Length: 211
Image (cartoon, rainbow, N blue to C red):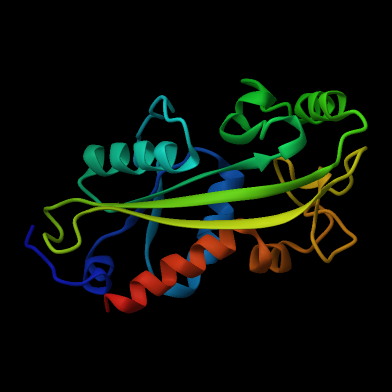
């Protein structure tokens, strides 16, 4: 492989690995990135296992995942670490959002736990997404390394959960300025206002700056 000076030329020749095994997340990221004419493959397609998330923040865990995939494939890798933050219960579930649903991804169990811990406390909450782009030195010495992009959307929680169009914590989260949960909104619209979309806007700006 030869060194390339821009991300645009890098992506013309090589796929971008989406460092996730979460089908819902991969689908959503794929839809957001489809406009860029960038070929993507998932971690599952690349036969990459999941690294242990030992970081203390969304940024640290996102970095762990993208760097791991980039090292395994020698391809640029994009990871996402995201979660629901509820200030009234100490910022939980936060970076442990997926773990609160257990190994079977039982989000109904996570909803119940949040509702019980919240009680009569304020139900304001927000979603955070940190994207991490890791670029191997074999592709670009100038742009090699790790690049982070963060997005956030504020809102409030509702119980019982409502809607079937989303995934994860979407059925209990009503974004600020709306009356429906993420799981009630049409996916295309939800994707245009979400925390992930906001992080992607910064990612796109990065691409434009390095064309």
